[in-house]
Image (cartoon, rainbow over all chains, first blue to last red; front, top):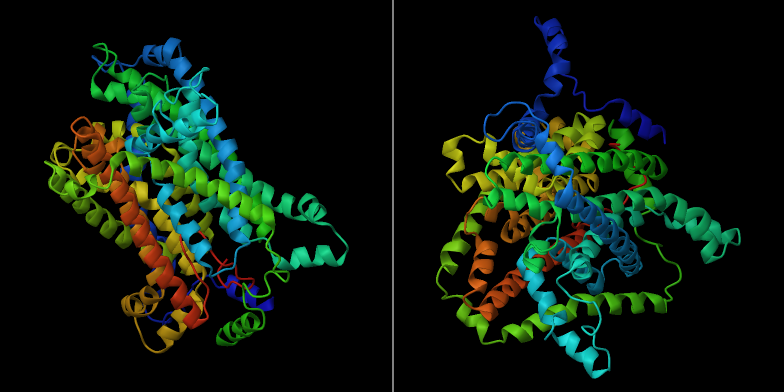
Length: 310
Length: 285
């Protein structure tokens, strides 16, 4: 343990040849120079991520034609069909964070308990990497081919006596989109929760068992509390991912479902009333604000999780 | 310093990570139930799509109009994105690990942003602020894909670095007289091969599948072509998206296999995708 502190106390100060002239100037410059290594990355993030976001935020308060300051974009974006879009987006994202989150945790744990080098584990982890990036029209195809009106699973269920299209179900509505979102949300959950599961040390379980704890007691008093902050953090990440998803819903419902990302897309495609282009930016700003709130909660939870897993 | 590193090594030799993990090797039944259900949920739609496309559609994918052009564009974007991502992220992550470990949490928070900032919003802003010369070029997409790839690239590289005893490696290299460029190129990079490979594959998977930005920027990349071609021939369109999925998966499998074989040989820990083997006595916190 003493070794740890010694290493941590010298975070990379390579002792250079001191005592030369100019050493004083160097000692002033050194704190600045230390950050030189992160300059390219910082510049890239500023230009590629921050500047566009700021541009959207500024545009949200500008008149589409004159460019003067106005609140009318924000007013339009928070009323009527756009308000409904936000409501449905949030609802869809919440559901497609919680349901795949729980299922993904179970799958991740099942993978985690497999032997480290087993083929099953390798297939499951790589598949998660692929499916987490899957989406859009190909995903829509998969679900139309299996659960559409003439889909294979629909046919199987009909043979068993269940006609899922007898009721209100349709693949091209809220439920259908939710079902499709799970296809990339569960793998994403597996990817992000696995490191936290790896952090549960076997020694804790053994200690608990030595003191006579049952399995449920271990999870109730040891594993659960340790895992909880990381789990909640992952849920928030899933929320953000579902909230940002555009291609899948767009392909499945052809814009019929009121979701904010799709509404923003229509502004870019130009299918809007003249003079309202900047309403799309106000919608974008709204999304960023919602995400910002989510992110703040996320970082707070991450900090707690990190403290537990130190 | 060397002594400190030495005791750390000894600690690890005494308690190698991952062994004695599960004393009881009773495979619980629930595990199989979950894996079977998950397998069904993920495989049945694939099977349905395969049947819809029919095997005849696969060979004909290659000579559809626009296929080569769209694929070439996507591959070009993938190459540019991967090169920039690696050149940007590897030195930054190594540098932060070595010199500014306190910035690691910040870097983690920043690199998670592109997952949650909607690409729709990002492309609106990008199209507004980018200079005209860049706007009329598909390379703009590649530059933005670097941002989208950051979460995956950073996490892969970070996982790879955590599995290394970076400080000892660097100190040993420096004491043998190697300068920084030489240390980075000949010591750190070879040790990060697996991590960089998985970062590369994840980046390529992302670029080959990205639809939102490409379609709104009006470029016919591979995913956009798949959508547009659906009106011409549904089965061919489905077949090509399945093909893309399987090829990426195969790539990842190869890399994971190579990675674990190498880890088994060197006795080191394994870093695939997001999963890291925790080390109880990590030097850089």
